[in-house]
Image (cartoon, rainbow, N blue to C red; front, side):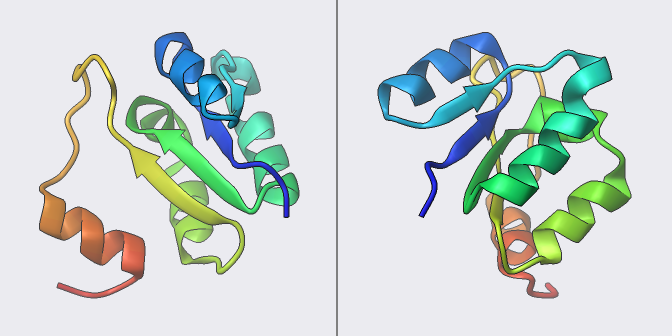
Length: 98
């Protein structure tokens, strides 16, 4: 089992590093390749909502449907990018239709 991976902003990454999570804070040019690398190497990916919105939607949806690695889109610590309501998020993460 590999260490979980967080992809997102520097501030959040600092907290995740303290918890033993491998972190990447790529710029826009590197984001897609870093995301694809994480999908190959990690068992769990924690993807910041801001960074998820920068990726092609089809790429994120494909990753969410895959059994491995598990992908969770996590809130922005600064609350600059809102997430959908909790029920919609749970349905989406579990692959359920509302």
